[in-house]
Length: 45
Image (cartoon, rainbow, N blue to C red):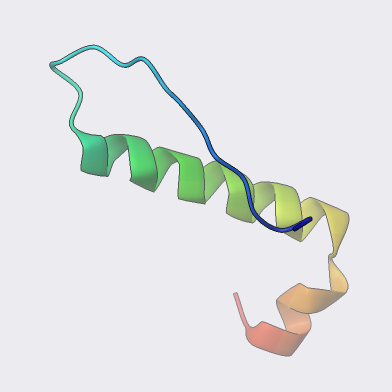
């Protein structure tokens, strides 16, 4: 499926999994906002 991915990440043990997921979600959100700026006004900030 085009909207489904699998990732294997190597992270240091001092970084928690929740921190990694939070970081990835933030970056993906910014990428989507840049690619589709019209969605910002449809779904809020």
